[in-house]
Image 1 (cartoon, rainbow, N blue to C red):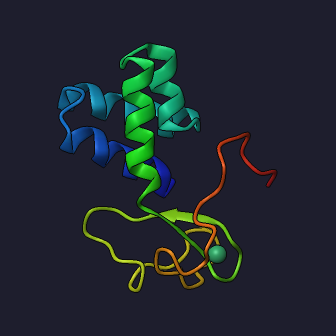
Image 2: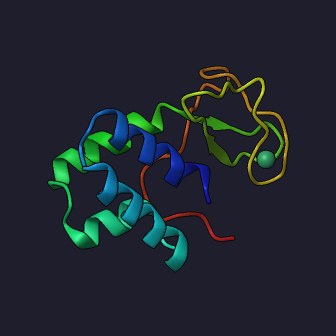
Length: 112
Ligand SMILES: [Zn+2]
């Protein structure tokens, strides 16, 4: 499961934006269908668009860039950048703010 989905799951759970059972079901659907969790929530209309946007902003603060490949890995509540490898290549994650251009502007996902 991508760290992005898990991180969003934690944001929604900690803020109690959705019932636990619904959250679990949506995360499951996201994993099964291979689509981002936010996309599942959007399609199901579980949250008002502005609420979802806010949750995504909160999640973005947990994103850390990999110094090797530049990919963003999202930290879970019990993780630190120093102890967490890049989910794509296993490289080291930059501490927040050291890169100067943190994260990635909103837009279509990069090609793989
Ligand atoms: Zn990497």
